[in-house]
Length: 373
Image 1: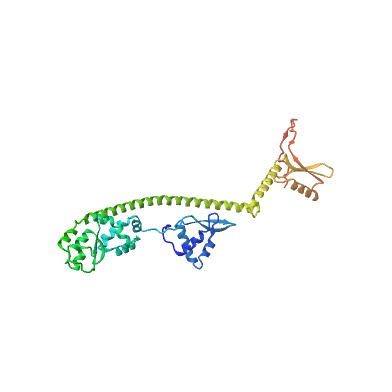
Image 2: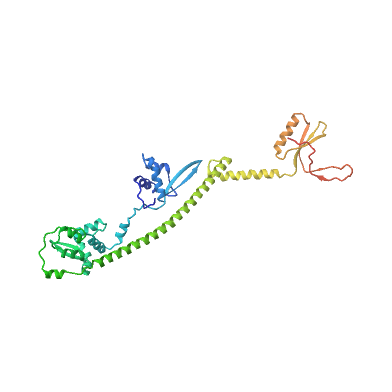
């Protein structure tokens, strides 16, 4: 379906409602359906026909996990396509059109000829027929005769048929002038001199050939124009398909971005988009502080003393234990009676004396001490 296809009344109604909006201010599907009244069952088909005709565009917004379909006009307008005959008639000169009608329907009176022209889509008043056919009359392509007080237009061949069949029956006359029967009062008898004056050569074959040539040229021109339009339409269709693919990818990327936004909002516990930058700054600050704390020199440990002040043991804490946690462990150690005094320390290294050699050296803390929980 294209915008040259006739749309239903419901589709035109919905298009009028959507046409008041734009891509910056689209209309939701619910609002569009409300325009359809009690015809919701047909509204889907009507909207699809507008999409197929490229008259409207659509996309899906996802807000707070809820999909919302919106529409807006593309800027194109529906056009009622003309038939090939209408296009041909619009490009045909009026005098050529009248001459063709005379060839088809002559002998024919001026008012009847104008009526035939109107039936074919050409607005030609009866009073203008004589003026439009003046050139054809001068060249002898068309002949005008008074029959019963009425001016009749005909081709030379049709006139010769009338002249040569004055006494012929109605059936024979129909065969000679193309199945057109004329009912007119008897004209006065013509003398041989009058008939000789009015006798003319029969150029109907040349006229027919000329008319056929003109029509053939017009048909060829129309076919060329149609082929050009088909080529342009194919290129535009390909471009539209590319844009639709890009729009589909953009919608997918938008949906992925919205999913990341919702997950990040839940993690940072924010409800509004404008609160997100501040929450990210706080998170970065907290991570930086924690990183600085973990880079302090030495490993956290506690030294346990007995009542006499002698060190009973030194226990290392796990790397994830901070100062507050270490203090709580030391307090529990004293309260439970496992030591008279506990000191929280950071061990940078240890020195020891090898059994046989006196060579003090600095070494990292060894794992011979019992690890603290």
